[in-house]
Each structure stands twice: as structure tokens, then as C-alpha cells.
Length: 343
Image (cartoon, rainbow, N blue to C red):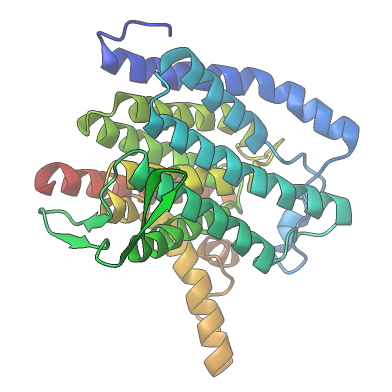
């Protein structure tokens, strides 16, 4: 461990800096490698026509984001069970995204793994994460709301004996964690449609989550969140418009899983949905569009996710991105304020 653990605030700021430095410096090497290997993003044919020029832009930059996070945690944090679990959930979900990206590049299409394949992967990851959180990290199987109100989701619990070890399976909480992790992973993935959008919004949210974890007296989780924010800063140097690298599903699915992991491990599952309100809006816009078109034959938005709607209205890509960053910051501030005032 480097730095002085006696000054945890300093450690958190240091984590942002180290992660940004590692990611920012290694990314150009990765970009050259991807270009040499001909690994480029496949752009959806039904998307905005101005995005077709991005076809072939190097992708899978999430690999270097995750590298920056792991290196920073290795240098600064103690590998407590909570941190190990959060990092593992992030890396495994990132690996699922990596398979999706490889499949997309290999077959030259914008879609990689099938929805059912992704769903099986997310179910496996979320169930394993939930069981480890409850049985190893002693996380209570309940959902807490601002103000102290809580719903006990451990009322339907099965206790198993495996090789002398007792494993509790809180079925309702397992289902809730799956919805949270799958929902946030896919929401961040849907947000990743404009240069700098997902990275910038994640950076803002992770800074708020770092403060939450710090107040929760989980310095190692605070360092984890701060390292993600820093890695996003380093990534944005290369991903800002016009992007020279995309994070791919490797990054977007992993970042969503990291967000969900932090929410569970700090018992801020509900507050996190407010902090990540921009991601929720992006996902809801797709759901609303699909449901409306299915039942009425009409589209609510010019195009979904909603960031494309504003592009269709004539907003420049940079304007959409910056304004969405502002909205994301407002959601993060609101969620953090509710947590601080009512938690």
C-alpha cells in the first residue's frame, strides 16, 4: 500500500489520480494494438446516420479501464472481503462484455451475444454475488430507504449445509439483486451511445458513491469507487469527441455491475437508483419506446435511447453529452443529499 492510511481522504483523491494516470497513459498503446489487429466498433445501421463515420473505431477500451481500477486498488487498498467481492463482480461482468465485444467484432455486426446468453451470464454473476455478499460479507438481505424505512427481503430464506458450511439463500433478495445488477449493467450499456457520455456520467456517479462509501466507513470501497471515477477520467481523454476509442460492452457492463455492487455493499440500493437517475432514464426511454410501438404502432421518441432523440431534434453530439453530464450530476447530488440528510 502506498500513501498514508492515516489520511483516508487523501487516499481517495490519490486513487482518482493514479487510476486516471494509468488509464490515460496505457490507453494509447491499446488503441494502437486494436488498430493493428483491425478490432473496431460495429455501428448499428438503424442509428443516426452521422454515426456511421465511427465505424471501425477501436473498441474494448473497458479492458484498460478495468486495468486502471485493479492497479489502483492493489496499490492503495486492503483486500477486504467486500472489496474482493466488488472487484470480482466487476471483472467477471466485464469478461461477459468482452465476450460480447469479441463476438460482435468477429461477425462484423453491432450485436454480439444473444440476449439469452447475456441474461444467463448476468443471472449467474448476480446470484453468486448476492450469496457471497450475504454469507461472506454479512450484508443484511433488506432494502433500505432514505429515512430509515426498510423492507426485509430475507423472509423467504433457505438454509443449506455444504461441506459443514451454512449457506443462507434469501430468495427475494437474490431476485432483487439480480434486477439491480442486470438493470444497471444494461442501463449503462444503453447510455454508451455517444462519445464521452457513459464515461462522464459514470465518473460523476462514482465520485458520489465514493463519498457514500467513505461515510459508510468503508474506505476500501471508497477507494474502489474513486479508482473507477479516475479510470473514467483517463478514458475520457481519448473518448471525448471525436473518440479514438470506445469502452465497448467490456466497459459498460462492468461499470454497471460495479455501481450495483457498491449499492448493495453500502446498503444504498434505493438511493443509488436516484444517483444513477440518468442511466435509469436512458433505460426507461427504450422500454417506453418498445412498449408504445408494440401496442400502438407509434413511437414516443424520435429514436431511443433518449440521447438519440435529442440528436434527431438537431442537438450536436457535444451538446447532448455535456447536458447529460449536468443532469447526471444533478441526480447524483440529489441522491447523495437524500442519503446524507435522511440516511
